Length: 199
Image 1 (cartoon, rainbow, N blue to C red):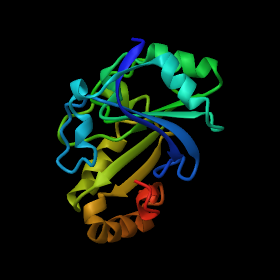
Image 2 (image 1 turned 45 degrees about the horizontal axis):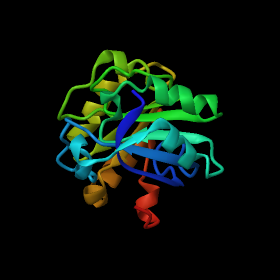
Image 3 (image 1 turned 180 degrees about the vertical axis):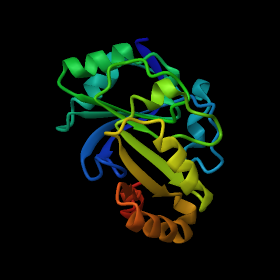
Image 4 (image 1 turned 120 degrees about the vertical axis):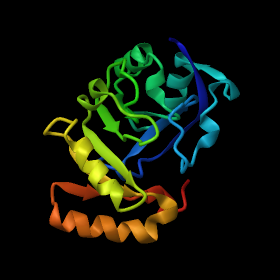
């Protein structure tokens, strides 16, 4: 593929996980059938609502900024064959990151895979095994056990993160905090960009 439905593209700071605080160019692809009830970008779900953009156009926009990290997000970016876009950006010196629910096979050349499984559509083992970072959104206490079950799917080198669902953060931050104190192989991920008011 050389053209993709793009909801938005922007230059900002990565607010979550391992790369928190680092500047990156984000491409939010349209299209998702995972259907998370608490999704904060539901407008991304229908791919047909978003204009097609070429790789050449997106690369030109990215190169206007100094960071050489590309983050492919969504929606669910793994619904698409990302071979050509990842190849084009890497050729220009970018690290290519993807944020995915793991519901689809990952097709492309990625430097970093953030695997964020959702209960609404089960992830596949072929995606989980490529994870560099497991990030589980915690809505209630039962999500901790669910996170532990998905830890079994990822490599031993994978970084493990629990992240409070934004609207329930006053409850779930305490649950996560107490759990991480007892399980130091897990880390806390906060949506830093939202605390800073950069949405």
